[in-house]
Image (cartoon, rainbow, N blue to C red; front, side):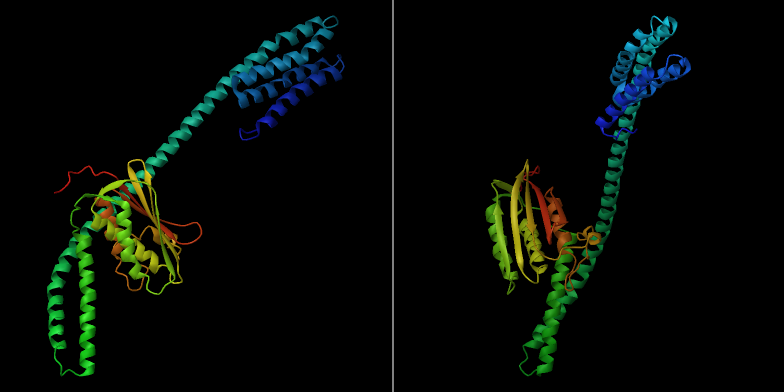
Length: 364
């Protein structure tokens, strides 16, 4: 009977085993002494079971119950079979010895198993932590190499791009252009603007500026971000909601944190083509503050959730895949954590953990 068997069932099995064995002593005639010796040895089974289930205390209790239930039988046969009765009585201390010894061994085995399970859990946690650290190191190496490449490429592209845009602008001022030529120039200027924005994202990702910390109120920070995010709603039936718990001021670079929150809000709005609610909330957590952006959109597939902060990964047709990477880096610069998880019903929740106070020396 395993340790997972209910306690009541194990107790019932021990008591039933002892009572049945004692009953057999009373039912079988005294002439069958061989069977009575067998019954006497049967007591060890429930005693050992009690010791293995409840330790040495359970073993001693079962031994005491066996001795008490067998006592009337020994008294009854004392006058007719005194030698056999003495043997029966002298075996009772062996019951106690068996119960105590088995119980001690059982408790020692349980402690060893518990220590082994605890060590296994600790090793599993350490292994998982090492795996996470290893993945973070690999990601950091990839991001560093990619950042260097992006910075160099962005500088090389920006100058000829500005020349192209400038030349197109000069040509656009010619009033004698045909409609088709004017349309082509407009496309050139539009695409140059888009490429310039992409290059700007490259530079922001590769070489983000250091934060300029200030003490700001989160409420005013939220108001500024929501005022900007309203323009991304356009004609969509999207409602922006703010839930602000008392957290007090926070030390951060307000412009960079606005960039992070605005990026998360715009992503949330774009994830809900059919409309819904986007909630921007905050709550205190010890010496940190939790800022959450929760939407009711389509969410992200579980396999893609680990990649959303990787550069150039995007599920949007017109996305660059750098917005969340830049946001992740900005939050890391602040000593915070940016995470994402799918909601239980629909949509996603992005959580930004930021320290209330920065350990660095404030810049003037």
